[in-house]
Length: 204
Length: 293
Image (cartoon, rainbow over all chains, first blue to last red; front, side, top):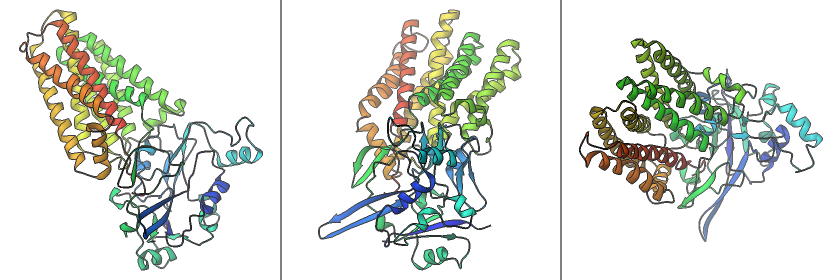
């Protein structure tokens, strides 16, 4: 069984938010819910100033604290390493949100429409139903497992115009992701938490 | 490699937390998920279990019944009210192998069942089972919080010990005047235990904060919030002065066994408010290590 993972090249990321938009489109996430997000930072002082964009999302940790702390078994790790939430089993205790070091989870207190007072649009109604969102549960990135199961890349990878994202098998030393991590000094965010994230970054 | 992302990242408005402080370009956010209802549940669970053990030691049935009520009704009710899908609460029993919530809920069930049976039949074995489960109820919230790598201030081995000691202390504090009011008898031994627990809790709090301050940047930020930041007035006044030091003085100044019933009630109220304030302060100081710091 492969261990699916992602590599994000910070040098190529232009902070265009195409991954954020692609994720929103693919999963029709309700207002305020961003499975994929990009944070920007300026560091240093003139003339040595740098601006870095950091795409963030679920790290699909090999040793996920969210899965261990979940009392219902709603959060599961598949054999290929994808960590996902079963909305029909989640009871909304939010222990996983507390345990996640990457702030990748969102609580769906209520599924609101994007346009207040106008109800759900047709797109929202179909999108919410297709994705099975349930009020009072927790939601997060699932590495587009429905696309992965169909042999496609996650939406954020497929739609990145700068080709800053790579997706593949971390356990296969010949895969592109393994080669990039090895050759370009790929690193994980907060390895000190000991969760062994499956998302790696290449230095900016 | 880490230098490429050092210095902190600006959190976009889509970040779920709330900024509580900023240091060297890094913005720290406090957890916003566990608040009032969780405070009620955590406090009444520990306090009730502590009261049960003290009452069991005195063979004091009203105290045991009050404790069972607190754990079963108030703690249980607060947990269920907090859930996003309360009708699925029973699913929390499914993962005791890895989840502290599952272990805690199972402990609650064993405690309430064995406690109620012991109150009815007075079989010693049931009493011991209830006491064992009560210890688990007192400590599991500390283990649950200490499991969170995301909040380094909580991710500390002393937290379960502190919660256990605080629960025993606050429960004992109430058991003393309650028993005296019902039976008219003094419980000098329990007063000595209470003073020891008060001193022990004070020492553990100091060790906990000292260890956290020297462990990591977010944990240091949390300690700063407690001792120098906006939580400091409440922490020093409610937790340390009124919740620990004044009760110690009330117990010791007249001499063990000489405290009046009214002063004993007053000391118990001070201890209880101190235990609530401490848990509230720890929940509020739960500062995340931002993902990009």
